[in-house]
Image (cartoon, rainbow, N blue to C red; front, top):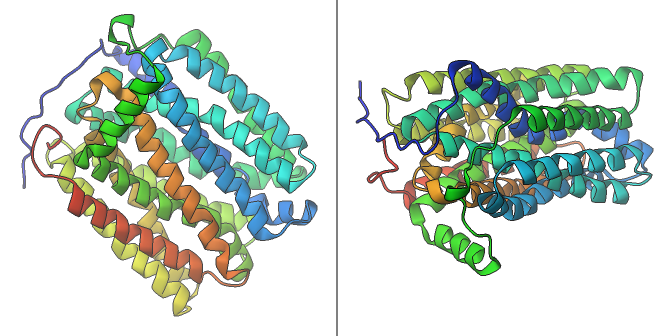
Length: 412
């Protein structure tokens, strides 16, 4: 067994107590879950939305692209802003904007207006995602940070498990518009919880000015940091493979393989369980094996499983032949995400918001690029989904292997 050398615990703020830590996990997990919930809950309704709005499948899939791109832009702006004025103010404003966007989605009369409303919703959701990740860095470093990110996978993993199941059940008694009403309620609950229960984690003495020039210089510095960029690209490309699955699986599994919305929701939920289980396994073994080693294992497994998905779609290996590699690839996110995030943020204590923003941007921009590629083959085929998932999985492994360095403070 390989034993990881002890990493320096560079704690930069008082950690929450044991009781406070549980509340901390739930709040940050809820904020991090904005992405999966806002995407996964309405996936079973995509075919219904296309019919009601009289739009092509590819047009309806642009609501996913708009959300992903909105998340990216929101993180770029809100990350540095939270470094300058603290985490709470931009978080509260973002949650309020998320509610407005969700209401606009629920009443949108056309696909074009729905796409625009999703952009508004996404900008607000970005506050929860980027600030949750930065707040973890405010309190933790080293192996402790990786363990906490793995713990968040328990909460985050419940989102893709529950969201499509809830979405499928909502469709039993109302239309897709009811899904966005539920998301509005979720935003309102989190806004109240954050306002009353989440203290400011970033003291004034640790804040940095958010002048336009200094923000650009910080982003430029991060982009020149080969190691940071390698970890961020590995994570982002893996998310590209994941979003290809998210955007393509609804049409592939329901349209090509004949699953009902409820059966599709069950399959989607089982894959979410895989993320939870692998994430918790990662949290248990991260002290005994280096984060870099675990990240390597996760990326290799994902690349191999991606080729399995491609083979299943090209060779027509049937539903089971497709579901098995899909489960393995999606589950590997539970090992890739916490290790890549921890290694990327390890040396960014003074600019956790900016680094978290760039990490998230690469994830969601790549995801936004992957989403429309899945629809290029038109209805009746899952091959484009297989090609994109396999291709992005291989690129993630290559980015990690060629750009990161196995030495220095970012290595366990």
